[in-house]
Picture (cartoon, rainbow, N blue to C red):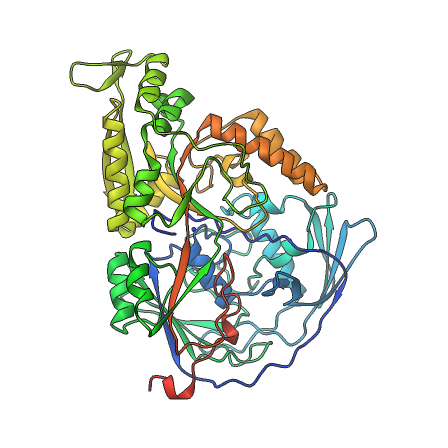
Length: 540
């Protein structure tokens, strides 16, 4: 949710795995050296640091270090105990009863005595997530829960409205502390907690520096055992070229997402390890359908035909990716391979605009009813990079060739998010989403998700799409769900609320001194408590 485009990245916390009854099995940790500092580089800064209001991958990665869910997902993609010690599932698959650990405490703030984690925190988190005044992308993904009850201090029961496919894995959502929020009923971005969170995870937030570096320190009382590395420091960068330079000059130890143009350079440096990982992501141009010029799908389709996406991918990203045709990431079980990406055809684009009633004026710009086809593309300054500049300028030039005028406007990051997500003051955005393997696109395209700070920022509404999204979520038959999603893919490719672009091949790069590195496909730091740095390589 980051990639080389504007990162709106969808922080989806659902996973696909086999549900069932499980008992906690504590495995003894291999003894590894403690100590050292890991400085990692991020392209941009997180708007929030809590796991509820965040809708970007930078925040999600930090959440993995600070928070836990009732269950987690291990490296084999199995559901494993976290804050829940064990669980039972009713025969009808509608009641999930979790026995909680009794040895977990919340990160203490300065001068505080550590507070114990209990069932009250689980119920509190669920109620906060589902409160209508809490603006979160999570709400739509947990509507299948009917109620949650506290059976005792360390037992909590969830009753589902209906059986749900792979329900157990959905309980990996992060738990937040009942005692730490200013408002006990709902969470807004004004609450101090979103910038200074406390959790139960392997690392505790220590400071945020004047340069917006986020310093996290090892949780000495972590219930899985103290993590090996003493500190994780997230360093923000506004330029990906500088990010690569920082790694090669030893200013940082790890890049979460390497600029594709830097891969060859880093491959030739024996100090670093390049590790690919599948983030199930894609980039797109998104349209504000509230604008009458963009409300006609023929206009949006014309923009898709106007772009030479293969030329852009080859020129700007060294061909490190795949052109896509619809709303699911390639590699996802939901992706419809029968739907082909639109070919590059400026002639077809012009014909569609003419069909929609547009005629080219004396200045070369298409017009309809006296209104010119003039639009603004918003790009946040913080996400500005050479790759982004090239993509948006190419978009501008391609559209100019068919008679559409696009003004590229760079804005400060928070102002950009307010314009796009809160106030919907935009025509076009260049962005990316990152998914897990649940293939849940409900928060992107369901009409119930239109509104301030919701992910359907373009205002797309189609009753048939709404119905298919709901049907997909209700079915317990995986093959039926695949069929529904293939139909959704075809419909949204035709409707074109986005011009779907490409999925990039993701690489992390890190110094070889960091040992036992395993990367979660879309959360990245899920296994970071097991990473370590040999004593001889630790900075003093």
